[in-house]
Length: 258
Image (cartoon, rainbow, N blue to C red; front, top):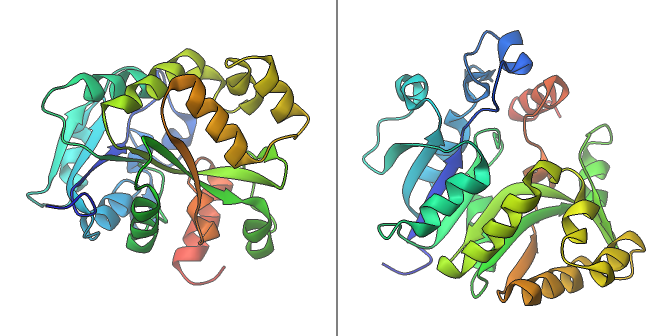
């Protein structure tokens, strides 16, 4: 099986400690079970991954697999695993597991709009990188959805939002996950993440002296890996379901009304 067809997809469907007000508001035990267009949220990305010829296996990771079991599709390529307390801890455990089948494609249960075209574009563009991160530039997204609310990382030449797709192609990616663990609580504050790598990178980000590709190359050198940002052609890749406004937008998109 070629690398283009042999991806192990990981769907992060865990929950933060305590009660999730968003899930509670919709009568769901966990966020991954919030109904979106009549189906539990997690079903949407799982179905897209199972429909993607690049994906060999899909693993759904959550703290309570028994809650998700009844709603997931019946497919021999799909299985569940229990996740750790944080995303970084969960991914580190997978990286350290000798049974892990590389490369890994990581996404989240709230990536409801994920489709096979996005998967194909991203896995193809990930070739040759130890770690790749999917992004969407602000202008095409806001041109289509002016009211979309996202977290933007600003660089020379553009501002970008994450698209909840990551590739980890070999155990070398562990270095990036270990660094992520150190800054996981600040993931919405891009400048704090960059600050962990030293003053020149921080100043380059704050003053927008570097493009996103230059910044990724510098971060990769610090970690001794090849780190690649991949700008996806479909801007809706950046629209996940993190709050009520997102849910309403996604349902309009799925209904062809946005």
